[in-house]
Amino acid sequence: MKLDLRLIVPGPIGGTLLVDADGRLPAAAIDGDEDEATVVAATAYLRDRLALRAPILETHPRSEGVPDGEPIPTLVTTEPAPDDWMPPAGFMFGRSPVSLDGVPPAILPRAMELLDELGTGAPPPELRPRWARPGWRVRASAWMTQALADAGRPLRDPPRPFFLRGISALLRGSTDRGDVFLKAVFPPFHPEPVATRLLAGRFPGTVPNVIAIDADEGWLLIDDLAAPLVGELPAGQRTAGLRAGAHALVRMQRALVDDLAPFLAASCPRRPLAHLGDHLDAALGPRGVAHVEGAVSDERRNRAVKATRAAVDRVTDLGFPDTIVHGDFHAGNAALVDGRVVIIDWSDAAIGNPSIDLVTWLAWSKGEPDQQQAAIDAWIDAWAGPIDPAAVRAAIADILIVGAAYQVVSYDGIVRALEPATRYTMAGGASLYLERLEERLAPEVAT
Image 1: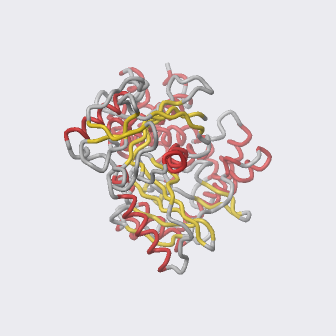
Image 2: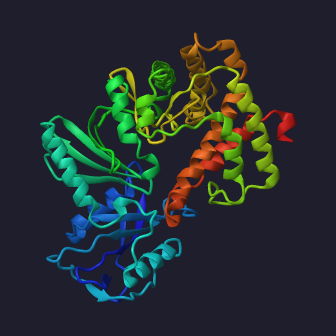
């Protein structure tokens, strides 16, 4: 993966920016790793080529319409350069405004927006995440370092960026007992640290080990699992992983039915199915922002909402108890560790009907009917006892409609909470699950 970088690096003196000899934003062509976030490659470039250790505030890659193999236009914004840093040959600190010649059109609007903000001294928009504001990296690294020292696991080296996006950021560190991650989440996901610690205490070995949390900051410090995700397993092993994952989640959900008070106290939201039809109607309507890539016709919205309301009634009649729902339970959020499944990324955890988690568990197996059927069978088997397996099997289409509608509403809420310029990073999720919903419509509803 090739990246076509443009850099916004404020100087140590207010009103200055790093520019090249022609007064333009610095540019670089670098190689990235498809399995790593852009921030990893960008950090390495700043460190190794420019000897600059200013923390990156935002990466803004825009790959839409870029042919395979062609460089992806990427805007990288950093904190001000340190006072003692000297620009390398060919660069200098110049006064604003700078020339935007050569900036790819895909990233030009964001570059103009951020440069105007720097030039006017305007405060960051309210929805900008904390890690995209100066000072966050130093604060988070200090907390991570102290928390690990308190746990008797001092860091070998300073924390390094691993992931950076509007919804979350990750710092990675190394200790004598393995790598660790500090995960920071944006405000809608702030219950995650407390919820994950509660789950890890109740189900050790099924949830990552939690070293420390800061609930106010939305920080979660956990061990690196260092294990393959279920979605990364060879095809011959993935079916067994899907079965094991379904059983692991349902075991937790069944055990927590009468023990939800701690999660409610941690501000995990209640998301009952009774309101799902209305919420879907709003998400797909003219004021909904889930579909940042385009509007949904009234006919299509009405059809999906009608089908969802009918499916909610039938799923409610199955008698699933309210419990913890993961909200994003897919094969990339479950790892196989020593033969057991460990479930990660409880960002969108809520209290609700657990049937909504089935649709995402099948998502990474689209086009693999045998894998999907094995996952469905295992999930039904795991719920046998309190729920009639035959009734659940007969209602699978309704369960998947409800789960897909839930995901559309979730994406709508996530997108609303992002700074508008970064909403594109979550584009497509709502469309994908609206299509999943429509695939399950009965012929008389679909037409």
